[in-house]
Image: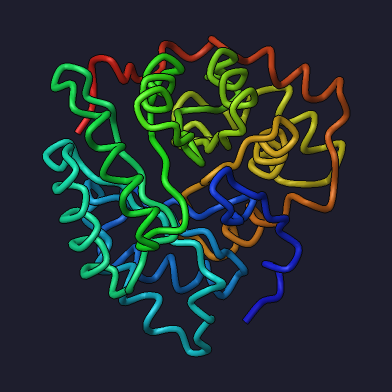
Length: 283
């Protein structure tokens, strides 16, 4: 078992939990792939594991955690899942939580997120009220959202007085959402990045500023991009099923990018088409 997790800084969340500064993404891995990836990942030193009902791999992840040759104390892990639109009600969220815990084989979730706002249905405030109840009952350590806009986040805060711990958004050097970053910073909401490495599209890891930074620090292009996220105060959740790349992706806390390198990588913003719109897409 690696001690790499000791080198990953923790960040305190609004509601008192502590989250690792980098996590392991698991989409689009199936049960078998995700179980193997999570088992390798925990051995590499990952402690933040990110999944969702919609990924259909929670069962495999639970089995992967349960099959570790050297078990990790449950309190060391930070397991996040997300629920679909059909559960957007106070009682629905409780059912979604119970289902997720059963599939994962755990007694509580560290963090539970509304996966998409689905504004056409318009029930995300009720979903948030359900999450607040779970938090107050101690069934989760942290609650948050995924793909929410600042205006939607404000609605949740206005309705309940409870600020999300995290908003997980599509974020990478290609998609720098400054309004979201600003709103999150004002409210102490941690920004998590899904697709931080560009999801294998648009050749992000071959972009000139990324290669230049990687070369300067003798790291991989992926490490340079993940360090860029950390420097921007964002928690990246890279997906990898390859143990060597997993270990590299985790090892981004021993070097710093220069302000010039960060600015150069920033220039990639907007060069890879539009991000997914949470106003039109969701499950």
